[in-house]
Image (tube, rainbow, N blue to C red; front, top):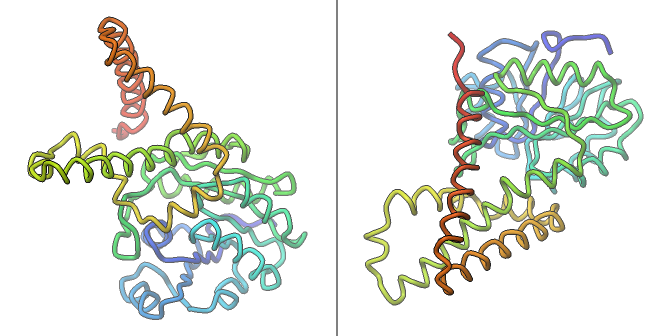
Length: 299
């Protein structure tokens, strides 16, 4: 394989938030030869073409991947794993096959079973919203986002370079990470926070059974901490079920921390509680300052 991104025909399978946003950026920036969209919905394909998000589209998975240089599976994790097997016999020689799912270990296992002529690479853009679907697509969604790349041992350096070129083209920052570390990291900063947010809403629902006014009083703090609870449950079930062990471990860490805070509160250990809350505050402020620095627009 000797082509660059500019010479690539790209097929994006799944025109939801991530898939449609990626297509929109690729066509807007004109960084590849062709952008092909694949969706089960013919109306979504038609909208993608009419709105200039894709150059052409189809509802057939096999037809969609034929003859393309880069296939990006923008489907929920377990669906993408099944699609890897279904497209295996329809790929051109040296075609790059990537996913954009939120877990890597199970995806990499499936990619290892792909034909020798394919160039698989697991990837995960750290971008998204609590909304989903084609209507939620957003140009510039990946600006300044970290995009994790997990190449297999068999993946050629040229394939990695082409995908890295795509990541940079849409404004993101590529980061190479092995699959087990990826799944541990995202359990801590993405998967468990979803469960915590959902549990928070559930606790307020129960509080509201006694005091219905709780909803009228809910404001910025509740809005911010409950935001990701609005994410589609079906999407997160796929994520959680393919990362159960890491999520379990991280939940245990959280539960331990909550129990410690509860103990400090119940026993009136005010100095310890202040110290713990202050340390957590400092950690959050340090992360946010670093995040703001990394996301500062270039002049």
